Structures are given as structure tokens and as C-alpha cells.
Length: 233
Ligand SMILES: [Mg+2]
Image 1 (cartoon, rainbow, N blue to C red):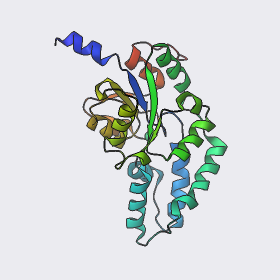
Image 2: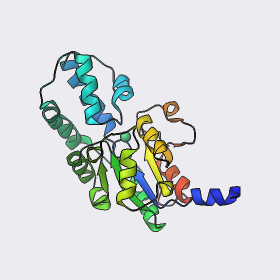
Image 3: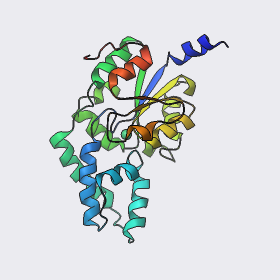
Image 4: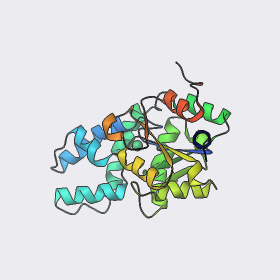
């Protein structure tokens, strides 16, 4: 296959899999503040930057394992359920969609490209955050949670599960992620990956071989359909 043909295959994805937190909804800034408070109450004093470094994009199970190891005592069986309302309350107060997401989704729909969500969050959390920002209806029936697979990101399982469920070959999928763990999972799944660096993770941590790094959603549209339509600028 000559170079031009490869390029044209690359530029026509069939399915775009979006991470949720930090890509579709601007939840990470809020979650990090809540997280710093919760860990401090457990006697583990971390900075917001450390929270980003350690926990961004990982599953609840992996988070829990780290906290247990660090705090040095068993947490109650209902620990996650007990802290959940604190995130909910903070999200209720300030959660918004990531700027440019609506326009991007419209652009992809016009181009005939399917979209879905592949998130480390639970289905319940996804229902809430996507619902709160008006995005749930757009993705209903195409929302996949790490709770549906054995291994969360950085394993490829969730992305492969989403693609398989929608009957799309991994090679025709593109993943938009804002965490190194998510990008690693996408690459391990054999999918093209775009890093969204408009959030909390430093841009240089997202610069992985073969990954396009963008700083706004208009650039994602440019990467996927070659134009910035649907974007404010
Ligand atoms: Mg994320």
C-alpha cells in the first residue's frame, strides 16, 4: 500500500471513542479538589498535582488499592459509596461540558462518524455527569464503563469491548483521551489515539509515540474530518 492510501484510511474513522472525565465533561478540576480533602482526612496529605499524577484516568478498584496501601489500614467496605455524595454535591454545583464538545459531536454526526463513551467511571456516575451536562441523550446506548470488563485502563479491554459491542474493527476506531493510562489502553487496543491536553495533565505527559496532541476540541475535529466546522473559531 502506498503512503497516500494509508493516510486516507487513517483519516476516515468509523467510530470515535471518547473518554468521559476531562474530555467530555470538565469533572477533573472539581474531583481533584474533593480528592485532596478526602485523602487529607485519612491522613494522607497530597497536592492536587499528585492526585492528577496518581489517579487520573484509573478505575475505582485501582484507586482503592492505592489508598489502602498508602493509608496502611483497611478502609470500610462502603468507602467508595460513602465518598460518592461528596463528588456528586461538588459536580451539582459546578460541572459543565468541556468547551467545544457539542460542536465537535455535531461535526462528527454530519460526517457520518459514530461516537461512543469509554470511561473508567461507573455507569451510575456516567449517567449523572453526562446527564447533568446534557450529553447523555447523545450517547445513550453507547456508553461503556470499565465495570463491564475485567481490567480497566491502561489495559485495552474497555476500548475493545466498546468496539466489539458496536461491531466496529479496532483499526477503524479513534480514541480521545486526556490521561496517559487511557492513551496507553487505546494504543494497546491497536486504535489511533488523540490526546486532549486542554485539562489538568501536563501536555508533555501526553506526548507518546504515534499520538496526536491537541489543546482544544476544534483541533480534534481537524484531526478527524480535516476541518474545524462546528467550532467557535
Ligand atoms: Mg479522563
